[in-house]
Image (cartoon, rainbow, N blue to C red; front, side, top):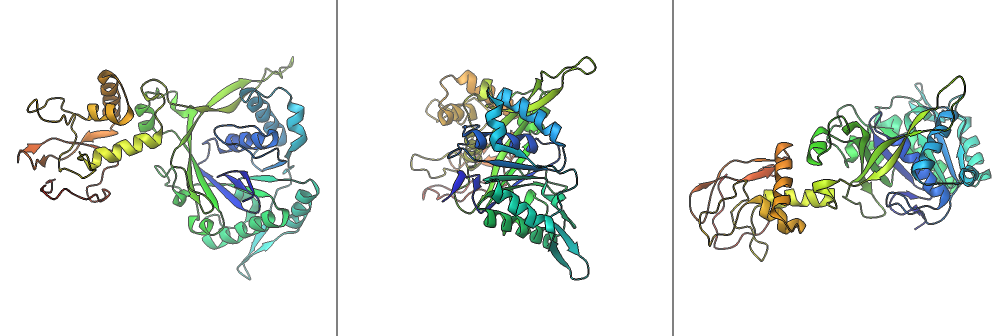
Length: 393
C-alpha cells in the first residue's frame, strides 16, 4: 500500500482528524507535515521518504502559520529552515477556500470552479500531502447535516484520487464529545465520515482525571493533549494514546516597536514519575483486569476480587491487595511505588470502592475495588472454573 506515513496518511485516501476547538490539532498537523517534508521521524510517526506538503488553513493567515513553523522547527531541532521551505507550501486562503456549495433547489452539494483549480495546482506542484484546516470552512452548508457533510467529503476524496495525494481533513467534534477519545462518533456527522475516510483519529485536551492520575498539576493540565486512533480500514488501529505537551517558543523577531512573539509548539510527552515508562494501553488493561477479578493460573476467574485492604485473613491466603497485583502486572520491584500509584489513582477516582461481594471461598462479604470504567453488566466474558460459585454483587 502506498503509505505516506504508515497508519496515518495514504495516497488517494482521506484521513480525518477530529478535535474540539483549541485542542492543538493545527499544531499537530503542521508538525506532522514538517516530518513529511523532511523525512524526519517524529512522535513515533515515520514518513517513508521526503514528501511535498500543502497546508490549506482558513483560520490563520500565512504569517501566523510561518511563526508556528519557526517555533516547531526549534522544538523539532531543524537547523536549516530553507530545506523545509522548499517542500512545505502554504495556500493563500485570504479569499476563502470554498470548493462546494449546497444548492437548496436541487438539495445537492455543487462543486465550485476552485475545486478544479486546486486539483491542477496540486498536480503542477507535485504535492503528496494536503492538510485542510478546518474541513467545515471548505464548503457552504450545514456542518451538522450528514448528507451535506458526506457530499463535501466526497469532493475531497476526489481531490485525493485525481492527484494521487493523501488528504487530511481537520474536523470539529460534536457539542458533547467529552470522554470520546478514540471514538469516531465524536465527530460531527460521524455517520457520513465513516464511508469517506479510511483513517479517523482524535485529539483531545487532557482531562482533570487524567492529570490527577499522572500527577500533573491542574495549572499545567491545559498544556497537554492526547492523540488516539479511532478508525482504520487499511491497517490495525493502535489503542496506545500519544501524548503531547504544548511548549512556548520565543521567536527571534523583536523590533524596536514590537517585542518578540511567543508561539506554541508540541513536544512528544511520556508521563513522568510514578507513571514513567507505563503506557496508557497498559493502564487500561490493568483496569480491565481489576474489574474482571482474580484469575487462577489458567486464566479462569475465581469469583474473588482485588481490594484496597492490605490485610490477609490468613498467611496461606493469596493477597487480594490491588497494590501487589500492580507490582506483578507492571513489573514494579518495590511495593511502596505500586502503593503510591494505587493511591494516586484512588485520589483521582480512577480506582474506586465497588459493591461488596460474597466470597465463594469464605462465604462471607468482602470488599472490592473497581475502575472508573467499570460496568457490572459490561465485563468481558471469561470462562469460570467448574468448581467455583458465581460471585454475588
